[in-house]
Length: 190
Image (cartoon, rainbow, N blue to C red; front, side):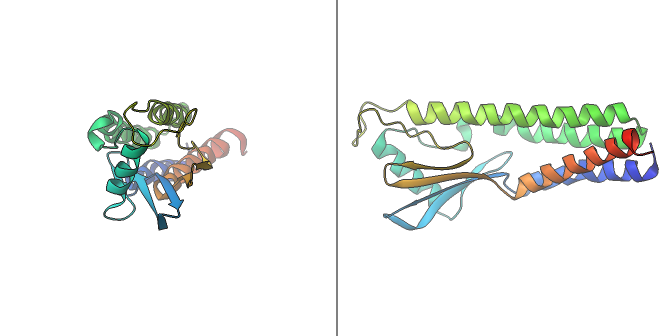
C-alpha cells in the first residue's frame, strides 16, 4: 500500500477513539409536560440523560405506562463494546502498519457488520422495551405499545420521540470513509 493509504487507514482506526468520549446515539423526547424536552445519550459503555435528571424523569414516565426502567447494568452490550472498539482500533492500525489491502477490506466489512448487528440489537431492545409492559401500570391504553423509533421520530401518546445518530457516529462514519478511500486508491485509482 502507498504511504498515503497507510496514513489514511491509521487515521481511520484512530478516529474510533472518539467513541470512548462521545455518545454515538441520542433519543430526544418532547411533550407538554416537558416543554424543554428530555432525552438520553447512548455511549459505548453507558446511557446518560441529556441533562442531570433526564434519565430519572424518563424512568418515572416509564413507570406510569408500564415500561421497564433504564439502567446501565441492564445492558450487556456496555460490557463488551469498549473491547470491540479497542479491537477494531488495533486491527485497523495493524492493517495500516502491514499495508495489506485485504486487511483493510476485512476491517471495513467488520465495521459494516458491526453496524448492522448494532442496529438490529437496538431494534430488538426497543421492541422488547416498548411492548413488554407491566400489567400493573397506572396508565393503560389498550393496544398501545411504546417502542421508540429506530431512526427518526414517532408520536407515542402525547410524547414525540426522536432517535438519531450523535457525535460519536461522526467518528464511525469518517473512519469508514477513510478506509473506503484507501480501498478506492489501492484497488481502483491507477
